[in-house]
Image (cartoon, rainbow over all chains, first blue to last red; front, side, top):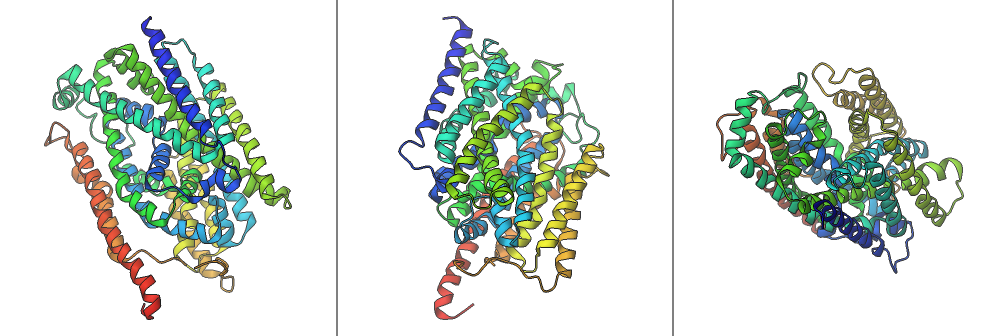
Length: 483
Length: 78
């Protein structure tokens, strides 16, 4: 068998196995809205770990992190800090959110805003903003999948075919099996990703340089400032680092899919214990960085840093291993894509369409609409990905800056009784408008600070000031059923 | 309102933020190399290991507060 046929066969086998697991996950289960979105709130520490790790380790970690190490150097370290600190943040909010969600029967992030602030309009706004920012994130996953499969199959599958096939498989198993599929496919994905990262991160520095120390010394000799901030960039210094790490670590669990995934846990204690151990998983990322750093010397001058990991792997390993990386990479795009369309479609059907256009729709009707919407959402993201919009990274940064604007509403809602509907609504609008203005007018970083962080400060200020001025209006959860 | 996290637990959570985020000007340098890694990379990897310890401590405080709360309801304390 030719080397490229071997690689292709391995990719197909891995993607096939992953999809089979996904389709099997929902067999013999009645998929009502509660099962589809939060798996009946029955996941223990292991499945919650897999689901959350499955969401956080996306194609951005695989291609983007190595790409940043290659092209931006030192500022890449922000990824290690923000992911670790995101779990710290989650320790103080997810268990409380879970308690609230169980007592109130919440399934989505938008549900939380609806019940806490008793406003369907605020909830619909949160749902709409969430869906808008999910699309570019999904688009990024599909593009990453296209690149990975094309390179790893030695161009036998081009990126268009890879995106269409992968997208169709994901839409298929989400349609039939919901969130359970995502968690179970994550098992295969995480095992492969962990294995691939270990081999890549250890073998490449030893193969080309004889170890980590010699590799880093060689980089410093060739590029003396590459490994510290701001590296080859001019704007990513320490103020940028601090504001970006704060913004993104607060923002990780404000993504509607991450927020919603915590509701699948069996208990709040599951989430707390999960937060204690999750940081260790971040140790996977330095291994991915090493591939990008090595590529800087092994394959210098790449136009697209995102290709650095795959290019250096291709130069270092036999074709069958490239197949494994390709398969793992494809699943790394498919798992987050699955949870993204699941969350986006539920938000659209339950929190946007029903309250605004069909108030009498039953829960079963919402579930049916959400399933159809998941396929439509995938199709929209595919169209964007295929049309090849170049501004994808800008869109993702806009996304992070955008979803973090939910943070004041969530945290003040949990811990501050006076947080009011009008305060949170105004803060959110001010935050989103500031983000859109600063980023679209290319003022990011703004005075050395991440634009989303500037918006978050304004958002907090407005939310608190207006809440303090709202006197009689004391919303909050209804007492019934709340322990 | 849900129960707020306890003060000791919050302070323990602040430690990784100080270590990994606010102190960046102090540790963002290449030398000394530790175990073959530039100092900034080594420092962050060290904190990835230390963070679970901080959260484990916070977990103990939270667990105690939880059992106080549920036990406290019966005895009328808190």
